[in-house]
Image 1: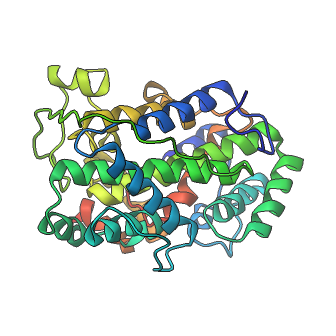
Image 2: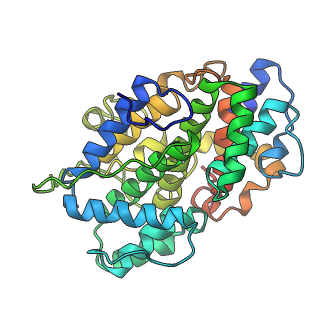
Image 3: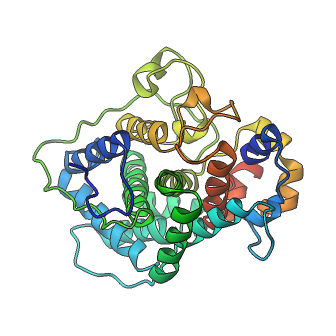
Length: 117
Length: 229
């Protein structure tokens, strides 16, 4: 939901389906690169990660690589806390995000039970 | 000198300082766990996550098998966590406070390790455990919809969150153990954005990335972890 809101404010039209389906493009070259970085940074293929890191450096720069690592790590922590404590999504977001959940099929997540019952 | 001398890129002072604090905090006695138990938790989490959850166990541990199973699942396969895991941990004798502290420690060390991997650096070495007793800090908490009680907004919240106002559930999640909550908030303020900027969807706290780009990384990581929240 925050991604959709920030995209709307910046005037970017993104295919948010790319968040859960890596066979489709998000509609923005740097976005696709950052999706690939996210996959690689939590994966185990060191060669793939090294190649993506170089592409991020070449395309977006050193600060972007550091920032992408920081954000990816931050959400790796937050997701474990959310799933491990069983927190529900705030009620207003459950209502507002129904269409996006359907698009991304998020209700299939085991952790959806904590919010949807 | 930076904590990450072998990184591919320069590391800013705020992140460097945050991670120094994380390592020192890891080594200190916790709220419910001793420093030795905390170190064993961190080692088991790092080991499981680095092997991608292959089910093998690298070394002997002072922790019981039930605790190790929980730690390994949180570290390596968080998408599979369910209320049954929480119930099993408590049935095996873990207290609610110990459970929260364990979830937090595992999550926090994964944060450090993913960051190090992302910048092309070696994982930080843990410090030796510091002697002392757990603080046993226990705030007034109420049922708010999670598996465990949490501290709601109000005067008592100020000590936990630094503010009496409403907090998102991701910050209330660990509030049964206030010290872990404070570390989580400190991490978010540096590695994502300060809470008061959250609803400003054009604001980015991360140099080199727009807010949209930040949220693309965040959303993909959460999708990989099957995190509905």
